[in-house]
Amino acid sequence: MKQRKAFSYGGVFEKLMSAITFAEEGEHEKAKEMLKGRKTVLLVISDRFFDRDSLKYAINISDRIEANLEILYVSEPGKGKENLNDFRAEVEKVGFRFSLVLKEGCMKKAILDYTNKRNEIVFVVAGSETELEIGCEGEKALPDLWKGLKCPLVIVSKGEAPPIK
Image (cartoon, rainbow, N blue to C red; front, side, top):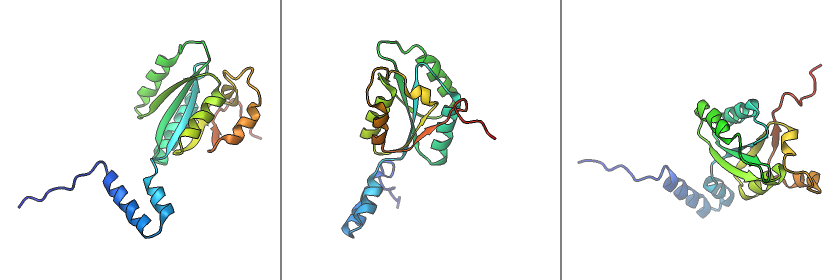
């Protein structure tokens, strides 16, 4: 007799049933942990700058911790996304799967808004501190905004690093 293979939505059903079992046994935190989405690394890029080192870092760390890679591409208000096609071509050459989200405005505010809605983001990777200021001219109380960031921020730029002694 031919044995039927169990139906699976990529393991979703199994994860759900396991979480239910833990919840029934009073292990509510473990059940919540099992139902969380996959970890995500957020790479922030602006239309003005594109740091290949930050892209490499984000891809490597995503691969190492088995996380999804999302790219938040922020352009200044009123300016076109001039370098978007070049950026896409560069990233696709690498061959790593990613999601691309387009935003306009202040880079810091875009990062905070995006990470506040997404609990699975484990950290944000940026090319430089200068890049974080893009589109934020005239914004008030920006230093206080970082207090609301719910995950670590990694700055990759070699140009802004202090000299090695």
